[in-house]
Image (cartoon, rainbow over all chains, first blue to last red):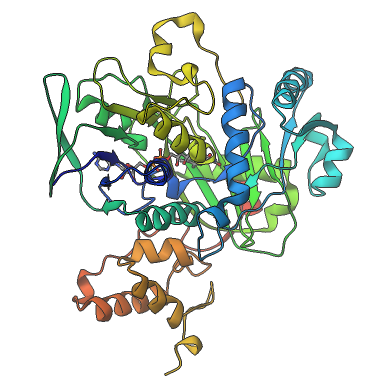
Length: 381
Length: 93
Ligand SMILES: Cc1cc2nc3c(=O)[nH]c(=O)nc-3n(C[C@H](O)[C@H](O)[C@H](O)COP(=O)(O)OP(=O)(O)OC[C@H]3O[C@@H](n4cnc5c(N)ncnc54)[C@H](O)[C@@H]3O)c2cc1C
């Protein structure tokens, strides 16, 4: 079979890239996934979308992506509700150190038009009444941050891409990429062979392995991040509440359930996505300390998913100098869902040799060659 | 039979019509349908609906019911209050 381009991965990144390319008129786009749609990190994520970041690049990617999410339902003409809830993120500071860091972050965010503000703990309590003021110092708040249903947002891109002619192949794993004369010739899966000169690596947790298929060493690794969901109740919490120091994010989704997660510093670098008792134990303690009221909620289920982590916790949206026609959108380090609209737009521009909507030199894979150039993102859970 | 009146998943209020609409739209597997409707992800964790949806997929695609894959069983086996977990250690002593 012939294809103009083969995209590996049908997570939020892959479907957004496919949709953006198709919208720009590219024909014969193929998306291959070894499992079902959103089976990777996308279908396992917290699906929070925030703009309160600590690096300029992340701020810009997030802001433009939120601009898209606000209109996504209409633009993609999706027939179900993508459940976009835009009631902000409340980020609590635990001490002076965090307060001072957040002061800098808010200044940076405001400089690109993100309407975040720094607030006292009493003001925070007005926004989230069940917050335990004894354990926080202050907070920042951005009312245009929010949350979407990750399955439906991915499905919305998928349905729109299909309408534009993109072909999807599920339950089919890319096993080999044939390169000759420094040019990609063929993508071989366990079911098909696609003749193509262009490949996009949007393989999420398996980004490194898909780099290895063409001998390109992508400096990313995967680690398990666990998450849980409670029974649904009437609405009591507007924003996502997060704390970097306490290590928690917690959101009530429109359906009524609370979802919450935290990271584990001792987790190994591998593809494990299992659930542990340790997570449940630590999560419950952190949640009950910060938001005592939700201690009353029953936990319904817990699961895990991969963060694909890059050295500076910013994504790699890039081509490569080693192999023309090989592109990647990987290493999202736990925040690739919220960047997906820009991931798709920027990569499609790069592939079509158009000027990119924002300068993304800092997202190129070559940035890791010079050590002092990296701008480390610290605002991550 | 009025499909709107047949409840398949009581936790998430999913009717037979919700299911057949998705099958008609081209969604084929349990995992896809689960992610769109939340079927099997509610308080009872699929005690009733898993086998019902399995049967619908089996009938629709004319495949043996045992060939219809079902989702992974997730912890916890029963709903437990966060507070009870966070205090569990205390209560043990
Ligand atoms: C617990 C948790 C919470 C999170 N919370 C948030 C959040 O609140 N906000 C946010 O923005 N992000 C969050 N993230 C991160 C987010 O989930 C990811 O960054 C994002 O989903 C990445 O999407 P993707 O499409 O790049 O990768 P994925 O969704 O992982 O998709 C990759 C796909 O590639 C396929 N694939 C891999 N190898 C092959 C191969 N060889 N052949 C064929 N197919 C292949 C896989 O099957 C998979 O479907 C969270 C992640 C986790 C685990």
